[in-house]
Length: 267
Image (cartoon, rainbow, N blue to C red):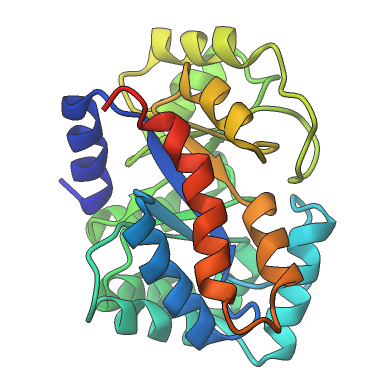
């Protein structure tokens, strides 16, 4: 069992839908990221996805692209993100998933990355552009260290793909609720419910749904179907807009809490 598995088990026992918050490490700086994560935990976030900034984030929309650029300008690197995880482990046991692309992992060194993730206390990793067919060495190294490997499903995924991803994924399955890049949307895809049910027909693993969720109403709607709701761009936009404000951490924490509240109504 991992912190991620334990968290989803606890949520299931309590009959609650989880909330996963994404933020880009180092935006606006590493210390603020540390404080935000601790504030998120206080507000009720269940899992944090910590993005390693990358200069060419192909799956991300403009909000997260800009956050990555700000983080890189502030001097954030893969090593500093791992140092941040180590620092967080002095204060919190919240499950932490590193969210990245294969290029930063390759440049850091795959075996070194797996070793250091384990050493600092990271719980899982999601490499957006690494499909399981090309990630056998990666998967083996992470499995050997007890690090959860999270893979993506999309609205176009067929049943054989769902089974493959379920076999390779540990922790939770990340269902990208629409095609295209990350970003906020005024309306959600109508296919979320049926697709989550299709995934469950082939897998018993928790299903987290993200891409496009940006309001309490949307969080509530996705929470009707998913084991966890993932919000990224809406949070990152708040961080970018308030980067120079002294109460940034508290204000962003308040916003995140509004997204969590609809998921706790039956608690």
